[in-house]
Length: 464
Image (cartoon, rainbow, N blue to C red):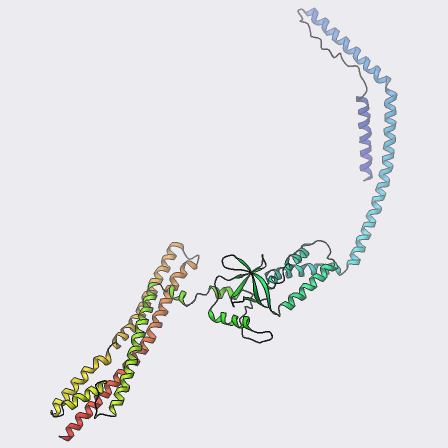
């Protein structure tokens, strides 16, 4: 640094000397410009050159005389400049010595700072890291919908380059305790709720720790971390989860109830919302699925009607079998017995034919609709297979057009294939069971008619 100051002073001295020399007053030429005359001969040119040379030599002599006359003044300027240079050199020495002393003091102070800080440097790093992590967690926590304004303060503390103050350390400690306490509460408070139309309203919110929030109607609420508000979900989970939410909303203070919470803080709830319901599942089957359901409905109605009628008929036949001497026309056995009493005088062979004819007349009413139920139970799985094939066709068309990069493009066809298969089996299984029940009831009644008819013929044959 000392050498630099010396060089700067020397350069300044030389500059001042040159400036002083150049600033000396010299005799200038006349301001007026003489217009040269036209030269017409060589002699005139020679005389003109001599005049110019004589003028230049006189001008130079005047300059030299002027400079010699001012030589003493320039020497004084030089001496003053040298004196100033000496002063600046002495000052440079003093500044260099002061700089070295300050450098030593700075090094000592830095060592003292590091010694005094000690573990505090690591402590401040932990404080910033904790504030950053906690700020991100609190921002996403539904508790902030009630206790607002905390995440911004913690983020500012995490980004701060200055040492945290006692107030900031106490604030961090207080927020930690506040969050821990709120995570164990089931709290009722008034919060801002955004409905599905974007309207804001101040309503009662029921918060279960940091996991789940409900409105007064028992609907699950989502959380908007940027606005620190709650929102009504555009779609609610299944009814059984809503019933569990109602238990929490309607529960009294201190009461233990069975409720629904989301331990993942919204992730599981979002998956439940995306899960299609029963009607949506059926809709994925398309037209084939609705046809299967229509066949199932027809088959169920017909099967229930047949089983009910055959059950009543079986009871009437059972009651008639206990009183064969008084036949009634409201049941098949009574009508068969009526045919027997009407033909008592006939021979055995004729009586047997009459009774067989009476039984054959009863069979259509006993077997009506049973074969149709069997047909429906066979057609339903075939329609399910048809839906499977059409769904796979849709899937392969999507693969042909868009490739296999996005599985969602193939999901529609696969869903149709699987749902129609399920619907076909769902329709076939109960129809097969109901057909078996109806057919069993019908055959049991036919068996009673055959037994009674055979018994009557046998009795008649013995009497002959």
